[in-house]
Length: 448
Ligand code: ADP
Image (cartoon, rainbow, N blue to C red; front, side, top):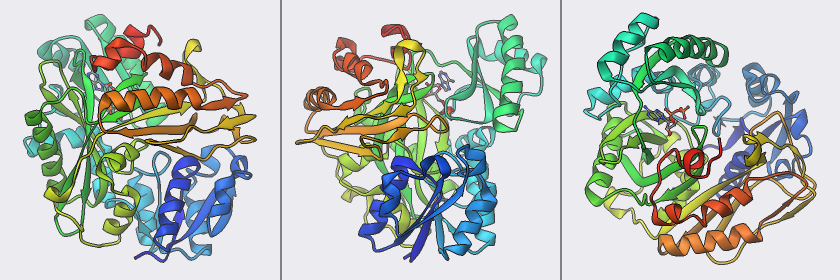
């Protein structure tokens, strides 16, 4: 097992990794930016190293500084968490060349899956259905029109290197397609440093359902069930639950089989997520694979009773999977609410600032993953996640009741959060019935 690892991340996921390592007797080295200097979770690491200024480019995205810290601290591995460098094949390669293990799949897999055009090809090779769309990258506006006319409007223009819900545009006709294509290209270039675009049919009223996978170096791969992440704002997840209220037994099995097939095809190692859209007729389509631990991983931890960070550390270190598929038990229903510092009534505008009162919910069936506390300052440099509030109960109905109770107990003073929005969602009959699609926040709650 790893002796000492550096965590190239911050906030709740850094804390989550420190906790798993502490239980496994792995020493941790936390890196931090000047903006995070006073964060309490840093005290729980065995060592702390400041790597630069608040802007991510100066710290959490700064490869030379992270590698220098790793060498000074004499670690044998780096955990990238999620976001920042977690899916950078370049970073993974540099780690390997410095003899530092990258806690994730190989650089080659990161590169293949990080290119969504390539990922679609791999999925097709494994007979996993993809959203109808362009065969590969789309070079220019006229080629885009050709593809769109063939598959039929509406379509989505997506950046091959896209992520985080950005770099996506919908077009309903030839005219809006040209405009969107040009805008998408410059956005992709600016945000992802790659102008490569592709086109997919816009799937109407879809649900986002993803399969958690876990694989070892010996060709074994398991699935840990699905998470339904349909409740989103601006293509970013807000609520995740397992099991999905929208699946029946046969489609659940098909999705899981498809995800495991994909994993085996690319010889995946560690934890990963295969994402699908499911339409109202229950056709399903692969959209992408995330080659890292995800924000919403605790949902699967609650229903399976497994610790995904520990499993990730074990498998990426070279251990064999300790269980077989039929030994994985799925119990009850788990739901996660992302508690963000943002104002849903104001276009989800981030609301950074000082938290001047913080009361966590608790009691039966409740888990909160957070690095925040009263006196903690939410920085404007990073994402607005304050806490992940999770519940786990025998049934969806009970889980919803527990979530409503827990949301009511949660006090975050001094900043605006989306807790009131979550309370509204958990009181909405359509949500209670499990009857919603990815447009729920925009169309039903009338927020965008
Ligand atoms: P990212 O990597 O930026 O998260 P994804 O490809 O995973 O992008 O898509 C994020 C979300 O965007 C999906 O959950 C879904 O809501 C929406 N989306 C993506 N592709 C399509 C599509 N072809 N049709 C309809 N919605 C889509």
